[in-house]
Each structure stands twice: as C-alpha cells, then as structure tokens.
Image (cartoon, rainbow, N blue to C red; front, side):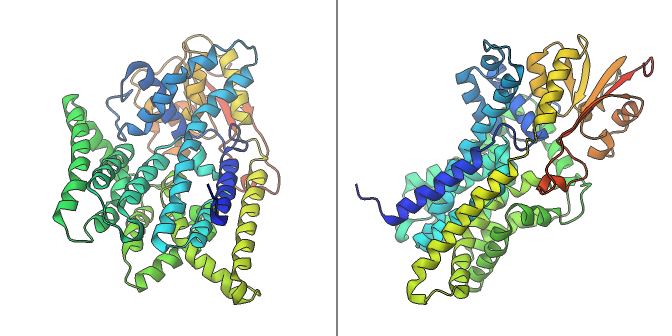
Length: 488
C-alpha cells in the first residue's frame, strides 16, 4: 500500500496531537468541579444503573456519563484501583484521576480526525486540511479537553453527524448515511442540549437538494431517540425537574464580566479565532452560508450575556480550526519571502512551526503540577477526618475522597445550602469561599464564616507560566472546620 506525502504529514501532526493531549495528563490541569460531577455520576450508573443520583436536580441528559460508565464497568473502576496491592496512596490517587482523563482523550482522537476530514471535504485541499488540523493542535496541552466533560462528546457526535451528510466530490447521500447522521445528532442532544445550536447547519445540508425524503430519513431517527428519552423521563416523573433546571441554567447570571468567552477564546486558540472567523466571513461573502450557519448560533450562545465558563467554548474550537486552514495558508503565502512557485516550502515551514510550537507550549504549560495541592489534601482528609464526618468540598476531587472514606458524607456548597438540619461539625474544603462561587449560597456562606482555618495546601506556579496570572488560584486547597462548640 502506497502512503502519500500528505498521509505521512497527517500521521506526524496526529501523533503530535496525541502527545500533546496525554503529556502530564494525570497532574495537569487541576481537578475540575464539573469533571468530578460527571465521573461520580458515571461510577454511580455503572454500579446502580441509576441515571441521576439526585432526582430533584436533573441538569443534563445522561448520555455524557453513561458512555464512560461502560468503560468503567469493564475495568471495574474505581474499585480496581482502590483495591490495588500497594501501600502507595499517591499512586492510587493519580490512577483514579488518570483513567477518566484517558476516556476524555479518547474523544480528542476522533475529533482531530474529523477536523482534518471535514476541512478536506469543504475545501477539497489536503494542505488546507493539514493546516486546520495543526491549528487545532495549537490548543495549549488540550487542557479544555483533558477533563471528562459533556461538551467534547457532544461536539464529537455533531461532527460525526455532519461528516456523514457532507458528500465527497458531490456524491449523493445514501439513506443509510442520513439515518445514521440523524441518530448521531440525537446522541449529541442526549449528551448536552447545547447541540441544538448546530441543528440549523445540519438541516441546511440535509435539505440543500430540496428533497423531502432526505429530511424525513434524517429527522425520524433523531426524533425517535429524543422522544424515547422524554418518555423515560416522564415515566419516572422526572420531566418537570429537568425543565425547571434548564430554566434556571438559562437565566443563571455570571460573576464573570460580559464577553468572558472572547477572553477565553483568545487564551485558548488565538490563531484559530482570528483566522477561523476570517474564513467564515470570507465564505459568507462568497454566499457559501454553511460556515456562518454552523458557527454563528453557538457564538451567539457564548456571547448572550448569561453564565459562560471555559467548558462552553469547547465545541466551537474544532469548528474555528476547520475554517482557519485556508485563510492561514493564504496569509502565510502572502507574507512569505519564498517564491510563489515554491509555495510547498511555505506550507512545510508553516506546518513545522505550528507543530513545534504546539509541542513546546504543551511541555511548558504541563511543567506545573496543578493537581499536587489537591492530591495532598486528599491524603490528609482520608487519613485525618473523624468517622462519619460531613465534608463540603469541590466535587472535582470530592469523589476520590469518597472512594477511600465511604463513611464520610461528601457534598458540595450548592447541595449544602438546602440542608435542613446542619450537622454539629462540618469540614469545608475548597480553594475559595462559597460566596465566590455563587452569591445566593446564603446558608452555606453563613456556616462557612463561623468555621476556622485548619490547614492549607498550596503550590506556587513558575513566574513565567499562565497559572501565575489568576488571583483565585483554584488549584490550591483550604481546609476549614465548623463546630457548634466554636473553634478549638
């Protein structure tokens, strides 16, 4: 089998992306709140087949933790780690964090392939597709994708759905591809509802030939898979809870300034942002409206003025990368001192610079062990908390503490805010006070203010490092103790 030059280049860039996503995976970034929530739900589903631990709080559809739970069930996670024949608790903790992140990395691999494939199909140019892939690889250490979250899985299903209906060389779309595409988009919705913002683009492609039969073949499986979940929710009397929770999330205000999404995008993928937006505008000027229809609804969601965090920008990153390839390639050719007849040299030089830059950024940013303080706190709490204690902590690592100390009642600041009977003693473990997370946590904050500092775990990043900039330092851990007897 003959391997072309571009296939070799793809393998090189793809290998670099795998390296960037895996290097220092267990210790960087710090152990994030949402990741802990979904890992805990996945573990619970693997053990009990219960989709929601708290039936009164149904924030998302369950597919985002059901899929990881299948892998967890196969390997017996986390019990297989807890019962390892070792006395090295630090090793066990690292493995507990590493395995869910390996599942997260397994999402990056197909997303990367789809960035390349979709760019190649849209532009019919392997050079541009490789530049799009290399742009995606510039995300620093792929840190937004390293946590086991819902958004990467959601955009993976969206891109798969699109890939099946964007024909190669204008070939006709078969009914089986349409049906599979509809099923995959249904899976995207069951991973996270924000997939709805990509629905117009998929419909645009399905109906571009104005054939009703294609629309029906695509939409029937989508509707069927979504209605089956609605029926399940209704039969369990959980439909009201998910509607009320979605209403709360839609109206949730942010403590961060308006436009924080732009700041995050500039931090995570500045080249993709600039050249991706430029590429979308250029296509719109040529009256090729697929790119703006695919990107603008989700960008509108990011800049709507409500609650936005770094997890929400994840789905737009591969899309910006896809549309950045051509504009970045054209820009490099315009500013290059190399003769136009030798533009292959410009392409190779650009690709080399992007690949080396991505590796350098990954090694630099992961040089800081962002999880060290949290792992030290886990060891301390597992060994020193009294039996049957109540622990209010960050779920990012609270789920690990439960594995070593099942006797402890582990909760978070939001759930604790609604507890009717306050325990005589409570341990607060987090990087910040409850009111910094949400100003509505009145009960939690009032108890926290009566607590006393017990111990602090801190790590200091290098001076020249992105983590030297934030003032809140979410990777650090402060242990406070509340007692009705007062501070001892």
